[in-house]
Image (cartoon, rainbow, N blue to C red):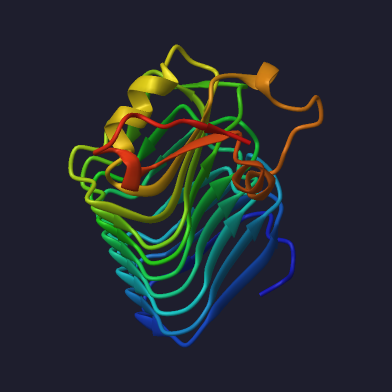
Length: 241
């Protein structure tokens, strides 16, 4: 479905689809009232802050999922995404996926620096990279990752956060990278996560970086400094690159 939508579109009976692609929503809303399963890829591409997508019964996406340029999205019951899950360049100030437990691929939230709350309170496992990037434009009052246990690869969190708490985190398979504009102390963050990640990277503010904004991938490659968890039982070792 790639035609521009300027009104309200409702699907009442559809329960399962093999794939879903909706592109070019300019104004209005599209609601799948009873859709529970997407057996393939899922693409939802809007056009402005006035576009709304509602999937109140959606439980599982078995393929790749991407949501971009939407004004609001509702997926209150989504619990599993089998592939990569990306939310990018959206206009909403809050993300609530309260039932999401597992993303078997990478999970990325990137975009327009508008986010104020992120509710991922049930998320336990990410099978790839975890990337949450909000920049310095707004302060995130709530970043709820209170159930997160494992991230298979690197984890990068960027933004202006009042607090960061991962009480159930057991392991990050790669790097843990944190770039922020708040009042967090890098030494404290390192102490919290050094035994749970291969390496810990912390940038305290933009003055430590190049004038040109680095991409998240570049931040991970630059590795301003790190501490290897293998050295935690010896004298503390900080390596500057």
